[in-house]
Length: 227
Image 1 (tube, rainbow, N blue to C red):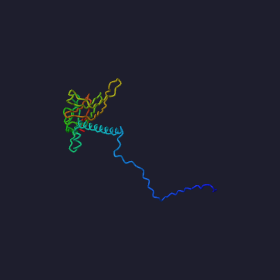
Image 2: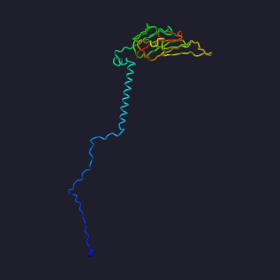
Image 3: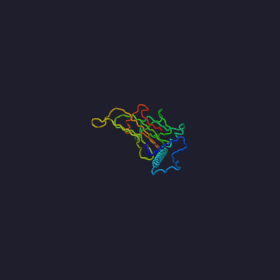
Image 4: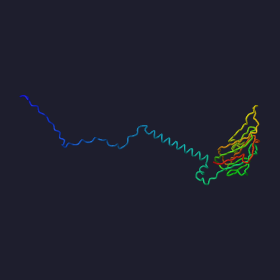
């Protein structure tokens, strides 16, 4: 250092790591809200639509249950007391005679039976409302066209029976265009579910009834049973 120069002071800072300095406070966290934020406009529409859809489904199921109950009131009795339920059923055989296209049957054969149904003038009459499975089989010769039907007899239409199940058979045409007369034989079977009210009856009608054949008593039969 030369004479006359001023000495420059040196500043020395010492870090005291053992000093008692106050701690830095933690960051401020806002307190939870006392009340939730109000929903945004339109945010509740999905929930409303879901509730409305469930309500419509419930209404549809209720209407369907009421409809089934009124159309088949015996179903409730069946489900609650299967052990005491009586099933309406009937079967008749030996159908070969007829009157006004209505086949007449025998109720004295071993295969015949009547339970909760009555037989009169070729008809099986229901004593109870409900759904019935009805069936009929006829054995016939294929000489000409043959019509076989199960018909409903009801006071609602007293003029004539109403065909419910129908089968038609036509023999093969000959060279001149007319039905060929042959010795072939065939069977016609009908079966289906119908709804009967108390007092209504079922019958079997045939056209060209002279073609009906019978070799054994149960060759031709007719019956129904309640579902």
